[in-house]
Length: 280
Image 1 (tube, rainbow, N blue to C red):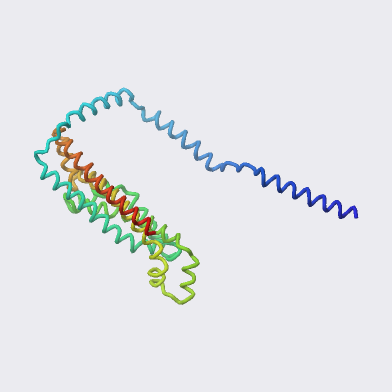
Image 2 (image 1 turned 60 degrees about the vertical axis):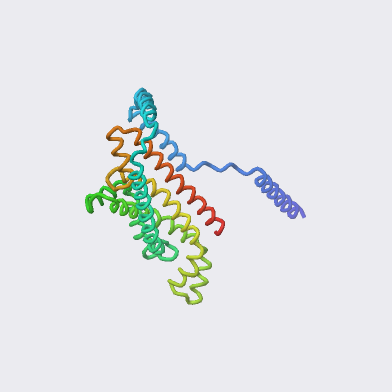
């Protein structure tokens, strides 16, 4: 009888301890790796600030100079508005063509980069994509300028290559998030690889692909402006020439055209992404 009472008391004690533990859970310990990385990041930031030897007076003086140059941009010089608008159209064309080519290439390669549907080729394709996006777009542009000469074509190639590397990564990640149970069910019915991609994967990732493609287009418009300054054509070349000649009023008009172009495209793409999300 005493043994039964002791067992019952032990069970009640364990139950009480479990209830106390549920009501007052222990605070999770901070990950030692995360703590070490945070401390290293803070220390490295302080080291960089000290090592770079910031000239705070130079920053102040440069700010005043910038404000003075900004005042010289008004009123904007619109005498060459046709040439500037034509250059802006070239910049937009470079961004659109480069992005579309990148989307097509990444769409094909992303299925080979997803580990859940192509485990044999995933690592190789992901490594290739990492190399493409590790090299900055500006460096790709300089390489292609040497290879094919000045003009919009090297800009298109540079945007296409770098955008392909990024889109392969995000597209393949979207594919890897597809429910594995649905894919296994299709495999069990005897469906081939192409059938699984077309009917089991693509309908689930289509909206994600569209959203990422539109987002990349926004990035590539800005990239196209920068590439124009190094000889890839477009409105970037116009603003670079105006800056060299100290024609700040012309720079003001070119900057306004760039703002208007980027803002209009961003407004349009934001509406498109909203519709894509609603559809998804």
